[in-house]
Amino acid sequence: MLAVQAIPILSDNYAWLLRDAATGAVAIVDPAEAGPVAAAIDAAGGRLDLILLTHHHADHVAGTDTIRDRYGARVVGAAADAHRLPRLDRAVAEGDRVALGGSEALVLETPGHTRGHIAYVFADPAVLLCGDTLFSLGCGRLFEGTAAEMFSSLRKFDTLPDDTQVCCGHEYTESNARFARHADPDNAALAAYAEGVRARRAAGQATVPSRLADERACNPFLRAPDVATLANLRARKDRF
Ligand code: ZN
Ligand code: FE
Image (cartoon, rainbow, N blue to C red; front, side):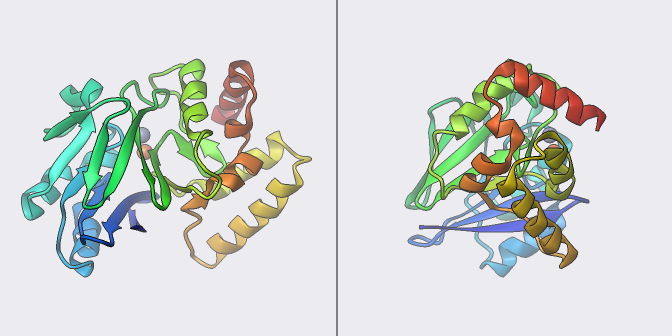
């Protein structure tokens, strides 16, 4: 059993604190800002076993060495990007498994936003740490990869169960909802979901983790049926 907590950092990023209930083992995903991440770790008991990195951008990794030095945690990241990530204690690739106490994450390679982007999937409960590949109601910009790569990365997420908690790297949902409504104006589920997002943001609440079922029903990028549709959506969103 895994408990998940969003830690707001920087202007609109989230680091994620994961705690395995059976053993008390703790992991942090993408600790880009050491202060609030350390505060969250200390509030959870001061233990840190693992730092899991999704990709090399500074707004995901900048606090890694500070947090590692303070807690002595092991750092896990993509073998493909080891040359531009903080020093890794374990370099992983597609299909590798990473233990956190009694829980276990499966590593998925999800290029598109960056070449070496990876995601972590836990099964009990279903939790997806997807960095800047999938956002609630959106997807990451194609900085280094192609629309075809992003499409196949999103297809990997589409095999996960409906109740998967989608833990992404940014609070972009409200602005993503504006584009999604523009791109898919007749989607009633999206209209209702976007209204809930607006209300949560107005109340100062996080909109993530979202449920994969809602992303399947509402997220135009996850719903894109083919590469050309996804490429067109991504290009329009870049100019929106
Ligand atoms: Zn990024
Ligand atoms: Fe980012």
